[in-house]
Amino acid sequence: MTAEQAASSAVIGASGEELQEHFDATIARDQRIEPRDWMPEGYRRTLIRQVAQHAHSEIIGMQPEGEWITRAPSLRRKAILFAKVQDEAGHGLYLYSAAETLGADRADLTERLIEGRQKYSSIFNYPTPSFADVGVIGWFVDGAAICNQVPLCRSSYGPYARAMVRICKEESFHQRQGYELLMTMMRGTEAQREMVQDAVNRWWWPSLMMFGPPDDNSPNSAQSMAWKIKRHSNDELRQRFVDMTVPQAEKLGVTLPDPELRWNAERGHHDFGTPDWDELMRVIKGDGPCNAERIQRRRAAHEEGTWVREAAAVYAAKQAARAEKGVTA
Ligand code: FAQ
Image (cartoon, rainbow, N blue to C red; front, side, top):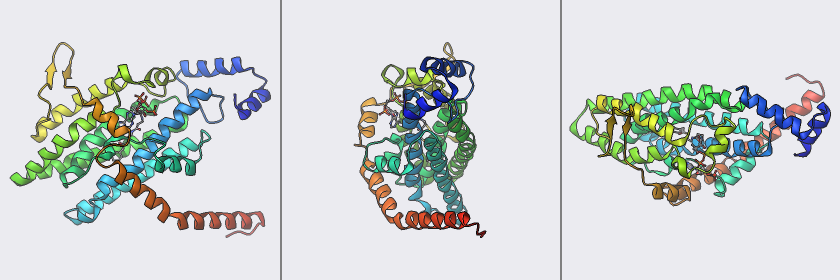
């Protein structure tokens, strides 16, 4: 028990065992754990790990598409892309705030990210050489994010679950913009259709890897599901994504690059091939096509933003001093 938890148990006069029982009963009743509630240290640590990785993913995830803002082919596409990338920044900020309610320090989380001590999603370590990648990221990556994150709206930790509600609404919008962009390109020239197919070929397998390792090699899943932080296993969500995406690919007129992909009437799901799990592990460990570039860019942005953080802190201190003296702005 931490000092803070010991103090809170003393206040309400409950023993460690009683606190644990109360926590277990709250989870069993499908009610939410809130920041001031007692929680086991493992639960807190697991949430900080997952929420921080999620926040970092949103922030690093601004880079692959962000590269296209200056090169988007029309003012309309530029405005749409600008808004989408800005939404991802907002998602990162809600999630860092959720991590702070668990006692994490945002500056420390950022340090851990840029020093390579905390992870972010593997998917953002792949390059975006063509504008079709912007559409495919919206369709596949936001689509996978929706499959993974809609169940997180029912996650047992209140601030995380509530942050996910708005995030999921925005991700749905992002997915549709990606699909609409691809439909426009598919109605265009042969060269544009080839660009779309090429982007689909490059992003399909990395998108399946976003859901994490297979269930029999996912060390965190069992405990996270028992705590109802995660509601479904990695493989269940991966299957859901495949089933959702296959008819969308047919409608769009592209081929998903998996010769083993077919409907299995008995299971009521699509069968599909096995992603290259060695590749996922390499990318997670920092050896993907763009890992070094992504972190270098994030570090540079952090350093360039030092003066903004310093100015904001001085301004906040001044405002607090004025408020203390009773001066209204
Ligand atoms: N990449 O035991 P498990 C987005 C790590 S946001 C990197 O299965 P867990 C929005 C895992 O952390 C995308 N690392 O772990 C957007 C663990 O390492 P650790 C991010 C991965 O936590 C769209 C180890 O492997 N979404 O896309 C990956 O139970 C477009 C063992 O794995 C979230 O973060 C991976 N793919 O399940 C933005 C959603 N997979 O910490 C811009 C919330 C696994 O023990 C543009 N997170 N690892 O050292 C989750 O649902 C879970 O954390 C999973 C992993 C499913 C990602």
